Length: 239
Length: 243
Image 1 (cartoon, each protein chain N blue to C red):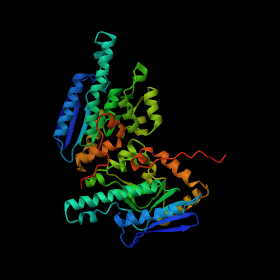
Image 2 (tube, rainbow over the protein chains, first blue to last red):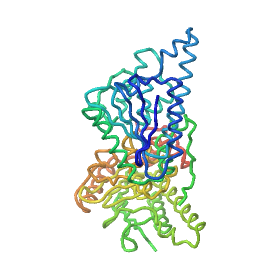
Image 3 (cartoon, each protein chain N blue to C red):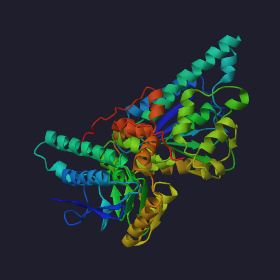
Image 4 (cartoon, rainbow over the protein chains, first blue to last red):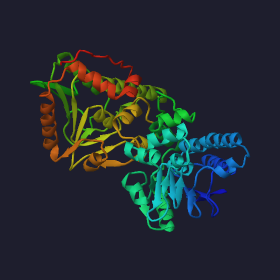
């Protein structure tokens, strides 16, 4: 469901298969394991790139799996379970001691968008794939940590409102203009190459991973607190 | 050993970082004491319609904390103590600026790095040179974490998202025009004279508004509740408006 590979100083996390990469317990477990591995093997001067095969980056939570519980209550419980179990994935990305880049070659919807946004940088396709928070259209409220993620990662209030409250399907050019992704490209290959180039440029800086992760968490304090990743306030930096 | 001077021109206070001692205007206990003492004086002499402009000369606005002084310590333990002392001083400096009861403008004539960026952003307005100088948060490259409340200052002053990330998590050296585009500084001007004159002119405009000093500082504190909470700065309600 996902694989982790090391190429030089880059960790390559791939969402495998030509499917929608729906976030269900299996994929979530697989992601957590891969991120754990990347953290364990991290050294100064590495970076993580997340890529996806097929037409989707990720189409969000596996609602079909939730529905197959058989009852309305069962479905609701399964969905809440997905919301809870995805939190550690966001936490793992926020805590990862290296820069992270998402190569968004296809649709990133709801939790799939949150997955992309949990990376430090994202690059996208210009001509295919949208960023879409489907919750308002399908009648689901967004979890609190999604809201914190959007609030702290997106400067423009109008972008947050358009994505969350208006169900806007945002294409690459607009996402680039509005500062949600770094850049938009014309093909899957270009997106992946750009993400690798970006990863390598960041890895070249040879930053201390722990310092990097601490500064990153300081950028997103509300999200960090919600994910149980509170940074030590007033801790004196070691020289 | 004075390292900054305070001059009063009408209602305008001009805080100048003096170049003779150190061209980089590295923040060490002497410079910190000098600045904080000057701010105290300005606060004591403030009236309705005052303003403060901070200027510097030469290649640097401030290149950050005096790490050479820290490293010159006799032992690792003493070096850590010196570093902690500088952080405490920086905390006091931010507190002094945030509680100064008048508008403040930084005329950034040259490079500002790490604590030098903190110094600039402690002002209400920041003007920079177009032709020279960068803003550079060197902490990541130096492998030094950025503690609170300084992270809170950045969160208070910079838009969430790519601006904060690009200044703090990317090790970029940001020139004036880019800094304006990112919303980190308010305007750029050409030459050292250009930026300090623009700062004085801006200050004159703010002085003319004749704002009540206490109201000004309370509203400023209200803009930055998280930062003020960390600095231990309580806000006061002023409910006697001029109608």
